[in-house]
Length: 192
Ligand SMILES: [Zn+2]
Ligand SMILES: [Zn+2]
Image (cartoon, rainbow, N blue to C red; front, side, top):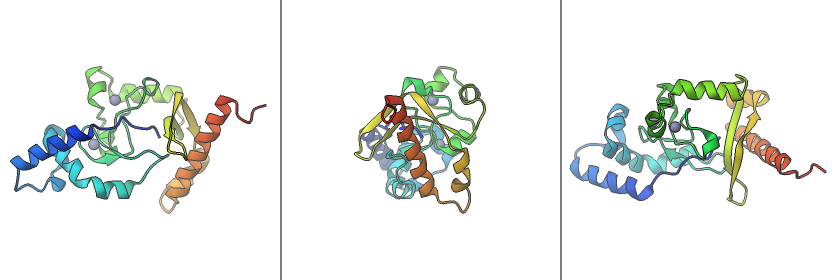
């Protein structure tokens, strides 16, 4: 549950506008993911045209808004598996691209593969896949709180809430409460 690197709104809209002008007969909101992966204009047009619906569907997570996947343009709260959270906010990579073991362009350039990121994550969390790493969140005042080093929040006992039939909203609120408790503990609040 990290806050994601925000996209460049102006650049996205400018790119989308140019592409839409050149493709007046293409439904940008229905352009296939494979084409969006290789055609930045198509990706940006897709993100712009699906933004309102996706944002209302995805809501906020820990106060953070969704961002467009830097590979395919799908709006998401998910992020690149290989970005180093110690270095700051990770780049948004949607679950479909993550499922295809794709990493963000920065990690790709640095030769940080999906497998490298997964192995590092497993080493930090001792292989417990119920541990969330949190590098930052927005508090109830809307202020961004950075967590360095990233917090590790074990949600094993909450896993049943997230599954089919579970209440995703309660799940998110409970995780948020744990993040705040962990930050309070770190800063010494309530630890006289
Ligand atoms: Zn994607
Ligand atoms: Zn990355």
